[in-house]
Amino acid sequence: MRALSGPVCLLLAMALALLAVAAACGGGESVSLPTPGPGGETVIRIEMRDNFFSPNNITIRANQKYILELRNRGNAPHNLRIAGPDLEFDTDDDIASDLIDGGKTGTLALVMTTAGTFPIRCDPHAVEMEGTLTVWVKPFIPSPTPSPTPSPTPTPAPTAEATATAEGPPVSTIPPAGP
Image (cartoon, rainbow, N blue to C red; front, side, top):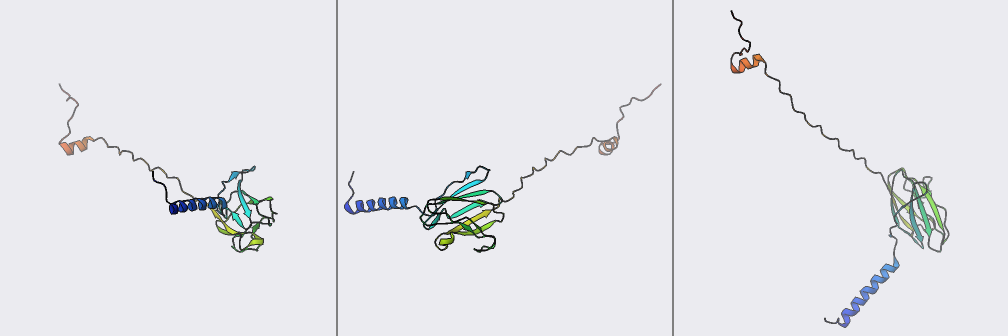
């Protein structure tokens, strides 16, 4: 087996170090699987850090109950605001959590009835902390109806007249009356 030369060994060490740093840093896109809540709702855990949401893109179904568990892992207070159907912040149709101090956890109960993609943000950090909430409706797919099985068309038995025209005069099976 041949030993690696100095430059190749150095490049390999740098690549491994870069991978280790990337894994340790994390980012705004970690995925946490939803869990069932006590009332049948789905709990979605969202971390709020200085200054990003993780995950920052959330997808839910319309007309289902959710609890957003908001864990503030940063030092500054954060909240989560969802723009309503008008897609504008700071209007009457917004849904927003309370401000959550650093190291604390809060919740936001949520049922979205309108499908679409809605912007989310943290009010104190509106430029840095943003993302989207996508609400979708499961499309109705009608169950296929089985096509009817064709039944055979009954064949009528030939009558005496049909037999006479097709094969000649009818043949009598009644013996003639005699003396």
